[in-house]
Length: 426
Image (cartoon, rainbow, N blue to C red; front, side, top):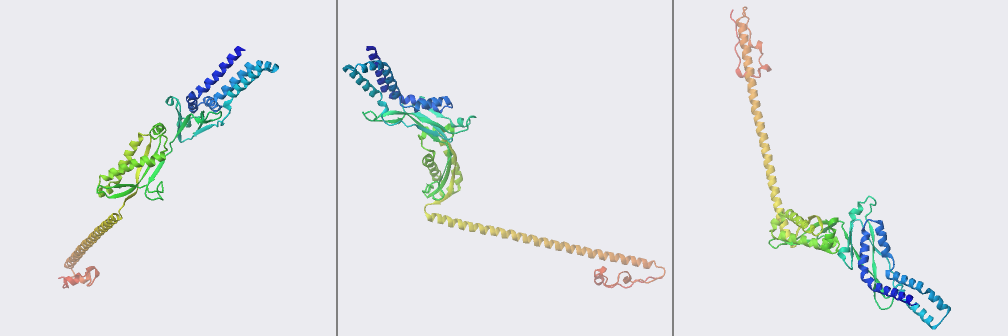
């Protein structure tokens, strides 16, 4: 009897010790188990899931101790039932009391399984909330998982371990709390358009960036910006922004940084120089923003302008518009004058060419007349020679050669006058 009693006391003492010590170590232990679930191993996942989804280990140990006590005291219980005495009744009462103590873990809220799912555009971190969090945390490398030849899936389900936390002195006054935290970083690109118009920007609110020139002339302009988180930068982003979504970082941190840069760039230039250097300013803002946030885990794709420069004082805008219209009218007049000058030069060139053509035509006509006169004189000389050698003394008139008024004379008979007939002497 004494041996049974000692063993029973040792089992109950062991159970009580485990009940006190296990909640202290439960967080770190289950944190390591949960972290192992992100490994690409079916066996690892199955083992971790089995350990995390079972009921409280204290309850399991309590049932094991209770069953051991039954095995130890069943023979004694049988004898007590055969010979009921006051001692046997006391013994049965002690057994019932121990059974009540050992099974108190069954009373209370049911432990419901909790889990987190990691999507294809997310990188998740499983961080134990208790114990050595730095040594026990694990990272889910979604790119490696996607590139796996076995499964082209971008999701993974992680079971969240829980432990019992007492909320009162009575059995069953407790709740289940998480012992690990799954922090997910959404790497999807985010684009923002910070403008004044509610129908064009990302938000319906006025998000235009207000700046001023060197002369303290206030105006505003819009800006567009796009960024994303690379896989290898997820931990850096989480370190700097503590789980804050990228959309909020873009609207708060990045926008504030862009506005500060634009304020400095426009503030060092007068109004005229600021209007002329818009592209240069936006290029400088884009370059600086990319460099600054790359160190904090955000890849900025671009930063650009939108809506143009709009002055807060309408009178300034009206004067600028008037000056622009006047300058544009002057340019139009200058262009018209230049066009008229070109047209006049063209007309002079045409007239000069026509005059030169007329002069060349006159020269050609005079040359033709002179040539015709020469041919006539040559024919007349030939005729005179023929008459001179005519032995019969026949008189030949010039009209026999070319009659007066002949079109081949081109009017030369009227210019040179009538010539006397040529008479050959016998």
